[in-house]
Length: 169
Image (cartoon, rainbow, N blue to C red; front, side):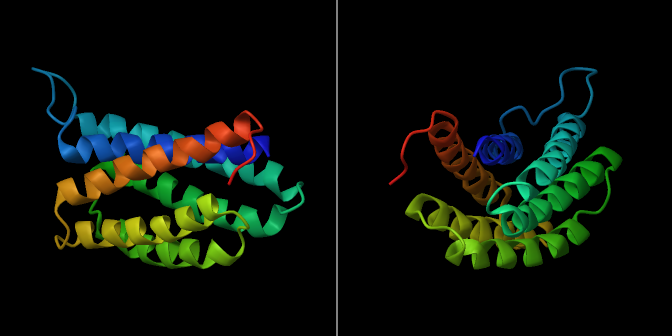
């Protein structure tokens, strides 16, 4: 389960960073400084790479291939998102990518046995659809930002439980 806690921590950090940026924390460049969104892009890219690295470990575990599929979805999303932010690219294709990632993440509700994970799968589905809406100008930045901050906190909780081997409810 260690690899799964790494996935949760990594996913939560990625959501936390972009969420804070979208609500306005750290979003203004320092005088003569670099664009903070580029830094966020690098963080998201690292999140994607770490998630990809965990896929190989998860495949070797009991729930391997099925859970690895979910992690691959997140890894592709975060890697693509990071590159788009670094390059200053149009984010609408990222929104298009978020739609199937969100739908497929929500489908995983039946894969998980515990309410904490089931509720996370549903929440991820909602948040990825919010990402799509944001990229097309239908969802305000602060709404998505707060949803991502909540996602970050929600992601840290199971990660801590898993890392400390505490029984989840």
